[in-house]
Image (tube, rainbow, N blue to C red; front, side, top):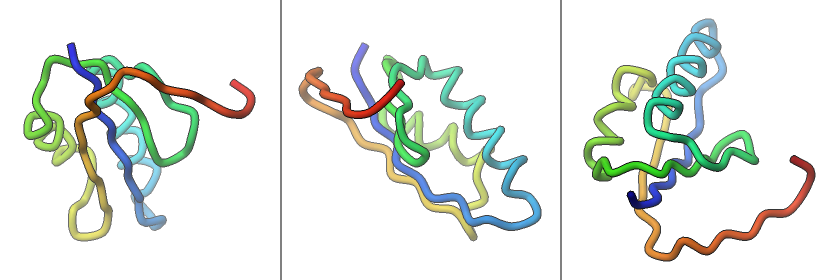
Amino acid sequence: MSIKGVTFNIKYDDTYTERYNNLRAVFERHNQVEDRTTSCVFLDTPKSVDEVHTALYGALDYTKDKAIVFETYRHNMKTFGPK
């Protein structure tokens, strides 16, 4: 497995909740391992960056929302704040 990061910004409008819930479902399917902020998650998945990116198409509206999928090369992570 390798760690992929996804940072995102969902435009708040009438369908925000639906798109947010769809996005969370994609993250769960890709083994979400860290979710401590409202706009960045880490996934422990064998899927490529392209495959994770493609999975987001069904969850987000790319005419309104933004997402960046990236691969991390070190598995070190430090967190700050309450769980």
